[in-house]
Structures are given as structure tokens and as C-alpha cells.
Image (cartoon, rainbow, N blue to C red; front, side, top):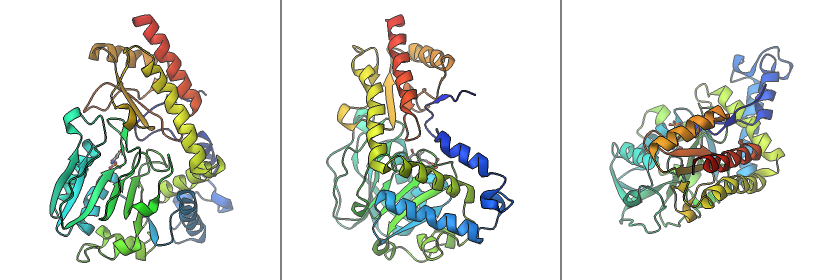
Length: 356
Ligand SMILES: *Cc1c(COP(=O)(O)O)cnc(C)c1O
């Protein structure tokens, strides 16, 4: 069987090794005579895996001891609401870098005042703002690390003297970040870490203490922290796949090695764009280009459609842009191999030759 060149934006490619391991264990996890999704989340076998996942994540991301690691359901979109429910007391600042950031801000408005402290809307979110208008009395500032739809990413994170909440759904573990610069990081697993179904939340204990207390049980981060994400049944299969993916990252040399590979992979494709004499036009401004989502346009929507169709025939899946912006996008998450990126680069060069 030949695996597809999978450039899907999310859910997206998983490491082949991880899928094979899960397949091999699916009917019989560690000689229990059952799969991990068939056993109690209170069993020793499950608990060992659950704890190990946290240890691995702490090690790979270098997460300080005063941070809790939580596994929550509901995707990144539920975090938009949950973060605000817990931490928006009066007002919160949102950096509008596109669709996801805007959605986060819209949810926050249910809980208090949410204002735009900066926006890249004036140039269709092709860059990351560098100046922020933070008002006095702001509870936190919310950032979107990587803008999956536009293909922009913070090259470096700005520093603030108020708490920082960051949505890392589409670039967690793709590069090194200093966790101590953030008070809450959240990320849906389905882009870089595993299947849909679990969100990883990394939260500073001191920040957690400032959370609103009069909230329903499942909306409180403290419930997850106090009960080790086992207050209710956790998404066991998703966590198990994250566990395997973390092992895979570790075996490849950790985050720095994976990041170096991500830079090399993205450059193979960006180089084609940059050397195409304008045949391909990158959407993101160069210094804000994402390593995870490479967005570009051809001369006309008709040509883009043809490019995507021919690409599909040649085995390249998921190279269409997000429905809200159009164009083309190749998502090159951790699990997408260099071989796929090199093949896409070759295809792009060939396509240009035939259509110039
Ligand atoms: C995909 C994505 C989301 C939404 O995640 P869901 O799990 O589908 O709710 C949020 N933020 C970013 C940056 C994303 O890429």
C-alpha cells in the first residue's frame, strides 16, 4: 500500500510508525487481552500511560514544575470559551490575526469585555502585528501562535506584563517555546499531536488560582487540575495516540530536531514559491511565514482549481486553501515527511513549466 502525500490542514498526517504501533496493540494492549479503549480509565494500565504522557510532554517542552498539564475535550473551540469563562473578570485583550483569533474573541464576549489590541485584518492577515494597545486593567492577552488559515506564525512571541493565553493548536511541539512566557497554553491535538478529541492545556498554577470559582464543574480548569484530568472519563484513545506521538518526537531527537526538520521541509516549498517569478505568490509576508501551513496563490481561481485537481491526480491531498480564503495551502506538520514536501516541490516546478 502506498500512503498518500497528505497535506491536510487538520485532522492531518500522523507518523506512520505511530499508526502501526497502535494497530499492532489495538486488540491486545500490554497482554491484557483487550485494547486500551476497552479498559477502565481507572485501571493501572491506563493510568501508567496517562502519567507517562504528562512526563513525556513535560520533558519535551521543558514545562516548569509550577505548570499543570491537563487533558480536556471539546477541541480548541471549547477553549475559546473556557479560557474566558475562567479568566475574564473585567476585560481581555485579543490579537486579531485571523479567523481563529476572532472566534476566540467572540466567545470571550459572553463573559466580559473583549477588545482588539492589534489586528492584521488591513492586509488580509498576511502578517503578525508588532504593536499592541493594551488597556489598563486588562486580565490577560490572547494570542494565536500559528494562523492555520493564512499561513502566518509569530517568529518570536511578544512580551507582556499581564498574563498571556496562547492558542497553539496548529504549531505545538513544532518548535521550541519558552513555556514560562505563558500563563495558559492550549492546543487541540489533531494537527500536530494525535487524533481529534483531546486538547492539551498547560497552565501556570499561580494563574489558575486567579480563576473564577462559580462555574459548572466541567468548565473549570481547577477540576481537571485537582483530579489529574480524571474527574470524568478522559478521551482515552486520543491521549494514547498523543503518548505515542510524543515517543516518536523523542525518538527523533526531541523538539529541536523536529523543528530543524520542519524548517528544511517548509523551505523546500517556499523556495519554489520564491523562485517562481511570481507564478506562485505566497500569501504571508516573508518574516511571518508559518512553518506549518504554506499558503499561496496562482494567477486566477480557475488556475488554482486546476492546480489542485492535477495535484490530487498526482497524489497530493489537501492542498486546497481554507474555504474562507481560497487559494492553495500545504500543511507541513511534524508528521509530514520531507519526502512528501520534496515531491510537492517537484510537482509545483513541473506544473509551472507546463502552464507558464
Ligand atoms: C484548528 C484550530 C482551532 C480549532 O480547533 P477545534 O479542535 O476544531 O475546535 C483553533 N485554533 C487554531 C489555531 C486552529 O488551527
